[in-house]
Length: 114
Image 1 (cartoon, rainbow, N blue to C red):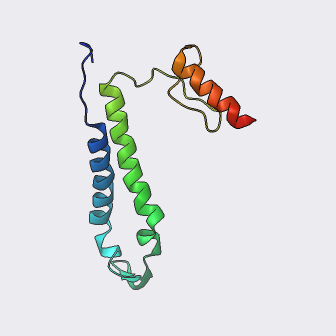
Image 2: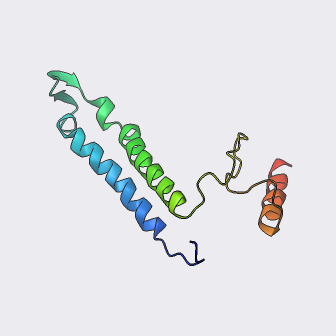
Image 3: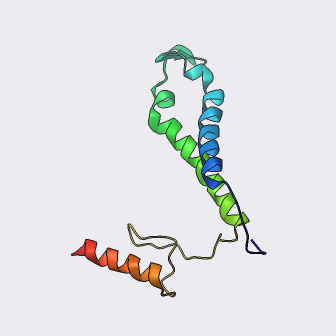
């Protein structure tokens, strides 16, 4: 980044990290994912909170979020922009800077509001 040339396979890295989060969840909860009922806590204990897709998808997302954070650090963009509190706002465009991308974004945002 310092020399101005960077090639980072962010897409591949985030895909792997998503899978890795899912893989780690399955490894950790393997005995709870073998049936709807019955696990190490008891033969009649339900497993819904383990096989519910919202649970394991969230673990995969958390893993990917962590990897994106690593990429942001390596690329020098971590902490450069203030987090917006406005719902639906674009987090990467600082309000202080004006230019074609910011102006285009503002124009689209205004069109949507109408």
